Length: 74
Image 1: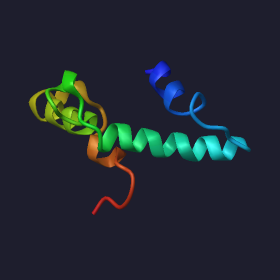
Image 2 (image 1 turned 90 degrees about the vertical axis):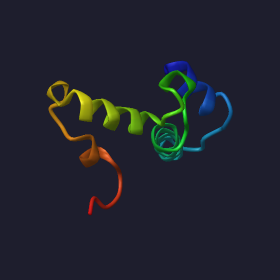
Image 3 (image 1 turned 60 degrees about the vertical axis):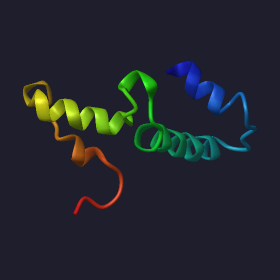
Protein backbone atom coordinates (compact mmCIF):
# COMPACT_ATOMS: atom_id res chain seq x y z
CA UNK A 1 0.00 0.00 0.00
CA UNK A 2 2.84 2.40 0.78
CA UNK A 3 4.24 1.97 -2.74
CA UNK A 4 0.81 2.53 -4.27
CA UNK A 5 0.38 5.77 -2.35
CA UNK A 6 3.91 6.93 -3.18
CA UNK A 7 3.48 6.16 -6.88
CA UNK A 8 0.19 8.08 -7.00
CA UNK A 9 1.45 11.15 -5.14
CA UNK A 10 5.09 12.18 -4.71
CA UNK A 11 6.44 10.28 -7.71
CA UNK A 12 3.92 11.90 -10.08
CA UNK A 13 3.38 15.40 -8.74
CA UNK A 14 5.39 18.26 -7.32
CA UNK A 15 3.91 19.90 -4.23
CA UNK A 16 4.69 23.47 -3.23
CA UNK A 17 3.65 22.86 0.36
CA UNK A 18 2.86 19.99 2.73
CA UNK A 19 -0.77 21.14 2.72
CA UNK A 20 -1.02 20.41 -1.01
CA UNK A 21 0.29 16.90 -0.38
CA UNK A 22 -2.16 16.35 2.50
CA UNK A 23 -5.08 17.50 0.33
CA UNK A 24 -4.07 15.27 -2.58
CA UNK A 25 -3.45 12.33 -0.25
CA UNK A 26 -6.90 12.68 1.32
CA UNK A 27 -8.50 12.81 -2.15
CA UNK A 28 -6.52 9.76 -3.28
CA UNK A 29 -7.46 7.74 -0.21
CA UNK A 30 -11.14 8.63 -0.59
CA UNK A 31 -11.08 7.53 -4.23
CA UNK A 32 -9.14 4.36 -3.38
CA UNK A 33 -11.48 3.30 -0.57
CA UNK A 34 -14.86 4.48 -1.85
CA UNK A 35 -14.67 4.58 -5.67
CA UNK A 36 -12.13 2.06 -6.97
CA UNK A 37 -13.12 -1.57 -7.42
CA UNK A 38 -10.46 -4.20 -6.63
CA UNK A 39 -10.04 -7.53 -8.37
CA UNK A 40 -8.73 -9.19 -5.19
CA UNK A 41 -11.95 -8.20 -3.38
CA UNK A 42 -14.10 -9.83 -6.10
CA UNK A 43 -14.88 -6.51 -7.75
CA UNK A 44 -15.95 -4.76 -4.56
CA UNK A 45 -14.70 -1.43 -3.30
CA UNK A 46 -12.76 -1.70 0.00
CA UNK A 47 -15.57 0.06 1.88
CA UNK A 48 -18.19 -2.29 0.40
CA UNK A 49 -16.06 -5.30 1.32
CA UNK A 50 -15.71 -4.16 4.94
CA UNK A 51 -19.46 -3.61 5.21
CA UNK A 52 -20.09 -7.07 3.73
CA UNK A 53 -17.72 -8.75 6.20
CA UNK A 54 -19.26 -6.82 9.10
CA UNK A 55 -22.72 -8.18 8.31
CA UNK A 56 -21.44 -11.77 8.29
CA UNK A 57 -19.01 -11.45 11.24
CA UNK A 58 -20.06 -8.48 13.40
CA UNK A 59 -18.06 -9.68 16.42
CA UNK A 60 -14.78 -8.84 14.59
CA UNK A 61 -15.62 -5.10 14.56
CA UNK A 62 -15.68 -2.68 17.46
CA UNK A 63 -16.84 0.26 15.29
CA UNK A 64 -19.58 0.51 12.72
CA UNK A 65 -17.88 1.19 9.33
CA UNK A 66 -20.80 3.40 8.30
CA UNK A 67 -19.69 5.91 10.94
CA UNK A 68 -16.23 6.10 9.33
CA UNK A 69 -17.56 7.31 5.97
CA UNK A 70 -16.74 10.96 5.18
CA UNK A 71 -19.58 13.42 4.83
CA UNK A 72 -23.01 13.52 6.37
CA UNK A 73 -24.17 10.31 8.00
CA UNK A 74 -27.91 10.72 7.76
